[in-house]
Amino acid sequence: MKAPQKKTVIVGIIVTLLVTAGIAAAKKFFAPQKITYITAPTTPMDLEESVLATGILKAFKTVAVGAQVNGQLKTLHVALGDKVKKGQLLAEIDPVLPQNTLKDAEAQVDNLQAQKRSKQALLKQYEFAYQRQSQMNAKDAGSKADLEVAQAQLESTRHDISSLEAQIRKAIIAVDTARANLGYTRIHAPIDGTVISIDTEEGQTVVSNQTATTILTLATLDTMTVKAKISEADVTRVKPGLPTYFTLLGDGDTRYYGKLRAIEPAPVSNGTTTAGTGSTGSSSSAIYYYGLFEVPNPDNTLKVSMTTQVAVVLNQAKQTLCIPVSALGEKRNDGKTTVRVLVGEQAETRTIRTGMSNNVQIQVLDGLKEGEKVIIGDSSSLPKTDSNRMPPPGRR
Image 1 (cartoon, rainbow, N blue to C red):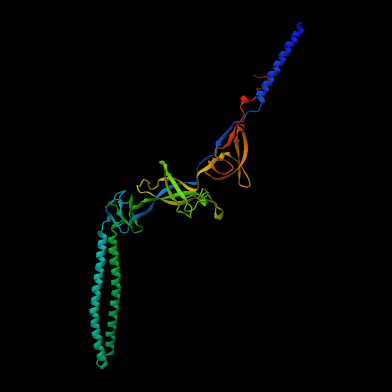
Image 2: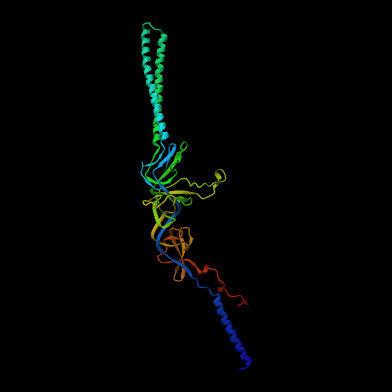
């Protein structure tokens, strides 16, 4: 073979190799990538739809025990945390002043009764004088003026006695009041409960002229009331009778169950102001309403003012088919929703009917079977990296 021909053959072989390499590189860089799907199985599970709220624990019944009389708190018979029975003596106020007031009132009654007896004796005298004057006047032996004087004295004395009787009744009322005030110096428990606060210590002076001074506070702790702050967005979804439960901040694993008793009609007072004036003003913060329910507390584990995480259960289902909410596609006009299901290596679109949701999982009522895999994402939605791109011309 001549040299020029040999050179031509070699160039042709090189060109063929370059073309083949270019075609292979083009297939590598421009061929569509295989799509990888992220799936989740259709799984039976317990599902619950609920309204979440923050709550606070309160005693089922709280009574502030105060003083109705003035004086020094002489003796306090209970301590903080003591359990007391209804009628038990709690405290004593120095009784000297109420005792003196009672004695003074009793003395006033005795004085008025003595005055009444004196007037009654005088009344008899005037009655005899009037009878004599009447008899003498009938025989024209006495003057008419003397008869009139005797009659006036008789009537005046009778009225004096009536006035004294009214004063005696008033004085007796004062005695009863003084006796009651003396009784108020011994303060007894109005209910069965636990002493949760002591506001007045022994030796302090109690002044109750304007308002009753609180000495201590009793509370019934065997049953606790939960006050859950429900937002205005959720309050229309809840109603009395729904099951409830809560957990404590320090014990998230233990649930305490109850039943919603009532929803307070007025919003929670939080001291916020209203923007604007008149009926066009708007609140500057969210509105909440208290939902109330009770739970037993036999061992006094629950304490007053504890913070709770409350759930009001709207719906619940046991071992129902569920899929992640993130798998849902478009919602149709008939209320059904589309999802993508992985069948083999291919994705197909299904129409399903859904039920309740807890914002993470949603109930499947129709359209899917247990174990079928719904697609919640795929690699086509990921941004392309530089490794998937062909390098620009002139660069290596």
